[in-house]
Length: 584
Image (cartoon, rainbow, N blue to C red):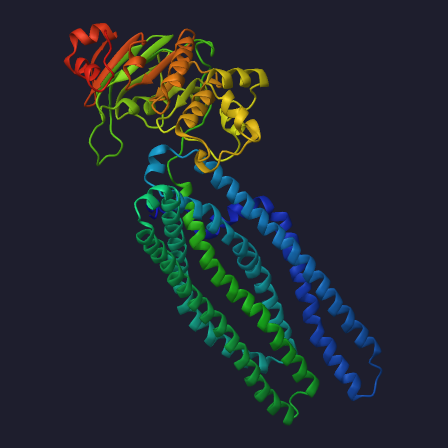
């Protein structure tokens, strides 16, 4: 899925200059070396003419040969050095673009991520940024150095023989007219080819992210057809772009061959009439050969720019997605170690403008310290409460406060540093078990890590793993069971030492023994901090200090288990059916 088209922004060439600006001096150095390389090449025809004249008049040619050899060696050495400097600079431009784009994507607002395909975003940070390498060297520098070399070559050709120059320019201008028709088509084809790569990446990410489901459903062939169709579309668009690029390159080559033949014919006639001598014709023909390189360089720069412009546009589209504001805020009004108080005031929220509201005026207050459980039927809006507290989304109306202060006024980094969050599916990242545990607090000392590992009953798992905490857990934690992933997520949240702990069905995949142990751990944590938990088990709910009953996006009752069983019919029904009813 392609991203929505952003408002018209700066032209691609200005975007390119923005990426290149930090490396302008190394780029200029490489460009100057390329120009000097071209200058040494332009001197060779003149030396060749002198060599022919020396031979014609029986003069010594040693000096001319030595000078020609020196120019050839200098041309090769300077050319190699200039190429290295430009390639290194181009790689630095790509690195800068990847750093900027990856940093920005990590700060995207969750609604923007919801509307995007991860595979397409990956293509923009890998495939599209790679194209900046060629557009920096072949397009930006190539257009500059090739253009200057082209002008210098034309000047030297005019110095040798203006008549033959006029003949050459007439052929070249005819080819330029054809190129003017081809170049816009390269731009369109390149953009569509890059979009197709993004679609293919999105399709692949979709399948690999749910490969077990695909296999269990016997859907490999259907998904294979989808992937192949995306790959074939990418191939078609890339071939189309290659067709027009090849047409442009061959047009330039044909023009130079035509120019050579025409110059040879006209020049031969001028030699026959003694208008010029044979040395002049040879020198001019050498310049025609040298003219091929800058013309092809300029044509290549223009065609490469079309491809790069498409990539720059796609990168800019990603950078135009809404991102979170990380600007500094005022100092926190309370000590960061104090338990947090949370309140919702008439909050209304929906995930998109074309979707129904999830919250219809939700209001409740949670004092500092203690455990508050949220219960209700599926779709009541319980998990959404946590997403709004974390500011993954902002409410459409109403106010959410933390310690009496609107969460919209908090600096995001400081707000989230106060919160520990265990998601419903307890995601685990690729890497080691230690990396996952320390994800939210990498400075945790070994003693604190050992205590939390023991508290969450992960010590047995660590003892069984071949490399202990340094064992790799696999993609999305595939080497761990569901219950182990939940315990890792809980341990990760506890290691942040949060002021507010959010647990979204955090023990749903645990066996009875581990659930009881972790329930006791959460009860201990609740004595020193504020714990909010979405729960479907009566054993968790009955230990809560207060229970918020939600239904259809509204809060219908708040109280203790005993109070709600007597006063709220929905809660009484949930306690008798969805929960495991007890003697209470």
